[in-house]
Image (cartoon, rainbow, N blue to C red; front, side, top):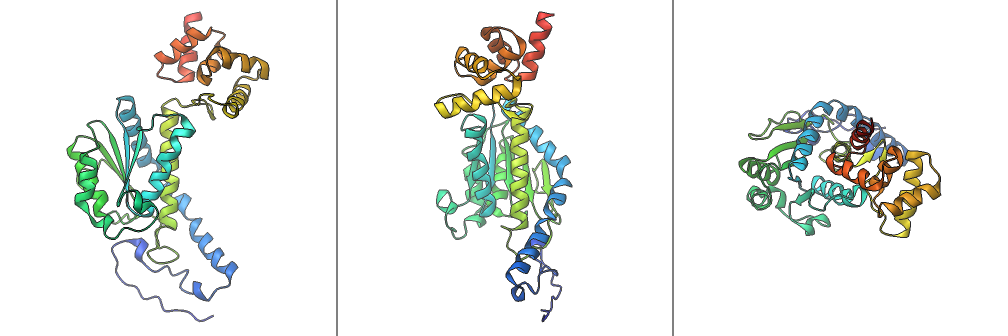
Length: 309
């Protein structure tokens, strides 16, 4: 196989460098191409694992914001913005949270979700304007930029910082300095892409992993799960009622009939039915305990057990 020379050229971001492991990728068989891409992809989880302490800080900032009545904002351009928009959209049906808990701001607006909008990511003023109009003191704003330098994202983070919101930045460029006013920098060392500069590959995979872990951990800390079960949904139709009854069965070990009756008594509120069944308290007391605990099932159960004791 002919080898293409891979001359070292200085570039600002590791994602823009040529990957020495894939210089002959255009000469490979189909399976070998896929194998080369997969070999690079396997490096991503370890790179994400290395930044978990900083990601944990971002989660704590998000939880503080939501508990204080604030919101979480995502800001991105291109792949980063599309992934952020997807993550925000999936939280409402998954965890039954208010639609304004997580808000995505994408360079170029909704049009850019489907097709590229020229120069949108280079417009720092547009990023500033988007966040200046939306962010409030106490919010948390998480920017995503593979290069760590996307003007739209940095402009948005600067505006958020001026508005007394905490900020974080996810990048795939550990070489980029932390922008002024950013509270937590999460720089994932994913290295050169299989195709130089194609940050929808490893950098995008890392961002997807980080977003999913970030939002899920935030929901867990906000009491939207019990054990590893989703318990914040409401049974608004037959399909959801069946799902909530099955979750109650998993969580309590009780019969379908008992769980169905408890769900009816709780007005379709899975959490209330769950606390009612696990504690033996009546539905009214279960609802009161959940209200006092901020919606955390385990905290509600502890308070009811202490009260009974």
